[in-house]
Image (cartoon, rainbow, N blue to C red):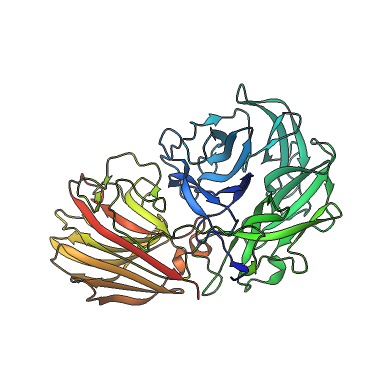
Length: 523
């Protein structure tokens, strides 16, 4: 049996990982920004093989994303377990310059149901976390602008305040803990507190989410400080490896000790390809570390996150693999599927036509920051193929349906079947910076279309068929780099999904998708 594992452990857009252990079970969550349901939760027995068991925020009463701009919404959740209860705390970012509101939810079972949010008053900052101390007290940490003011752009500090679980509010004074080890690097965030051998350890991220991302750490005998800075900071970064290294922007970490006494770190990183382009967004990676003279040493002798590494000393536990093809034969959507923002209308169904996913036309479009009639999944591989069969006939001007490759509302590809001036046209639309270009089009009159996208790195090929496997080229060699955050901006990875719209007019039509298949490889 092979004794190594492959990174990332969660490929595709799964950033800001947080982890906790309950006996021999491990649970991991990540950020979701404007996507619904929010905060996927995964379960593992060996830290390498993970299965999704649900979402923490899976009800509209928990997560109102109405009007939330792209790459805003749910930031950097933390999961903790204490005294028979799971806690998830996170930041809801309303807009680019709007409020950052922190809240937490609880559950006795990690699969849910999770409670409705407990909103914390006077809790500024982002990337909130919880720490349960030995004396029964609970503490909240996040970042904020230093009370004395910022000394350089994006200068932040980590602060601490006690949380009363009875009133579900912060109490007492706020304590300034630390403003980072790397002065002038900026963006001190992602704090997590741990206690080991009489020390409180404060681990944070510095350097932003891009190339200069890093993990730093400090410690104190008192939870309120002062904190001693580790002289080997940053304890983890890849910025010294250059921009062409296959794993970049490493940071935002959380740690866990196994039952075997090993220590492991989960962190985010990206895999650029076809140049400095990160279509998959920020993914979740796993790296070992040891304690040496009271400080963490990450991946001893190497100091970096590797694409392949030695497995944890835990019994292997594999889970059944998800099928490459979803035939929509169930009454609920699989966990891989997401909506954009909170679904407000009865615009989708798995039961109105059994065996199909029905998407009803809505006036809202995927070119707006709304809740369009869209169901999508993450791109998880550098090379992939995605295809579906769609039963749809446009009945009014502007009605459309098809496949979307999405980075955000202004950067996307749409292979859509649409009615224009009374003609039925299948077209490939590139939307870049909010401006649209029709790359290819052809008239068609059939109601059942097979649609396929194949990507070899950043070269995307688009196909159509009117009969199974009789593919015809719509366009090949399309540059896919507009689907990367390096072109489009923001913090999310690319999505692939099914979409329909009546483009601003009331719609009574629907598109039925019989199946959707996604397969990929990273070779």
